[in-house]
Length: 135
Image (cartoon, rainbow, N blue to C red; front, side):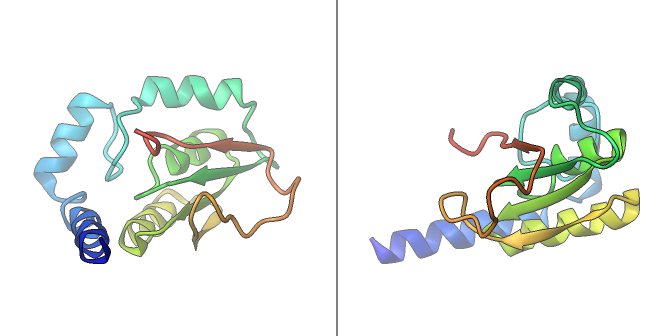
């Protein structure tokens, strides 16, 4: 069982080496409407709608649990002006997300943490999102 878990963790981490490849970016633009190194199937239209439903904007703080490479949390932060905190366990994905935050001028940071043991106090965030984590 431990070998199986280690294999899956390695396999999951390896996929982040591909997310910024030009062919992946073309596929993402075609399928979800943006190129963010997505590991979620949320479209940009759905992310725009979610940002509105969550009432995101300047002065608001979004937590993206299981953020992977930051899609759609970084996108929503860039489009609404909110701050974002990315959380996930594959650090490779969070590094991609942090790079994207820098390119998009997004305010926030990333924390290596599991969704079942988040290191935050209650009431710190205005909204929480999670995309394709429990599937």
